Length: 251
Image 1: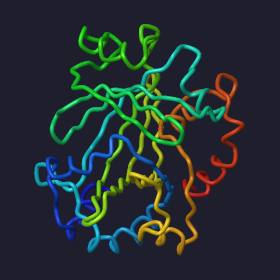
Image 2: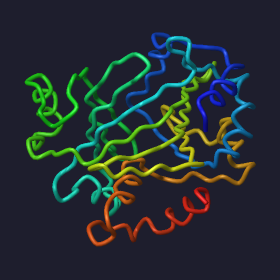
Image 3: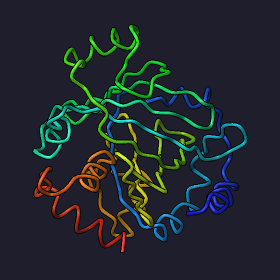
């Protein structure tokens, strides 16, 4: 989706600042993901403007993100996700192009709950500063074996519910890069409903149900790993059903 189209569809929403959104930071939360086509996204997005405000930074109601993910040589983080390990993690540096800030982030999944920790970073490699090493040591002592595994970029729209502690993010224009190999995923929109606890009675959840769009556990990191690595080098058989659903959208 072109940026001017995104700017047009986000214009009717009431803005909220980054500092105002901090009250709904949800660093510990329950996540429910949905995968939409751009057409499905456009049809539901407009109906949200009365219930949600939209994050606005530097007069833009969308943000461009870049991420550098880290893993082990044997892709241990990816493999943990593939085999459905209950407690797993991702480690990345995320750059927010709207304000030029970057954060080193450790994102853990523990008993279904997402717990994210982060510090500001100026790195874009595994040559971590002393402060970054101290941060990682507390959360993942084995960090010295981490290597860059892939980069990705996308455009994110962030909505904040006006009366409930709830956020919605929509990630569009996904692309991945590894060793000069680039993959783009046109027509794919990943939506994440972020709540203190799962509430299936909420309006957005109901809208998805009415459109017969069911939650789908999908990881942007795992999608990129599968696209940028050969089937001989990486297992993906347990994701087969998800891949079939995604391919229907991507076609």
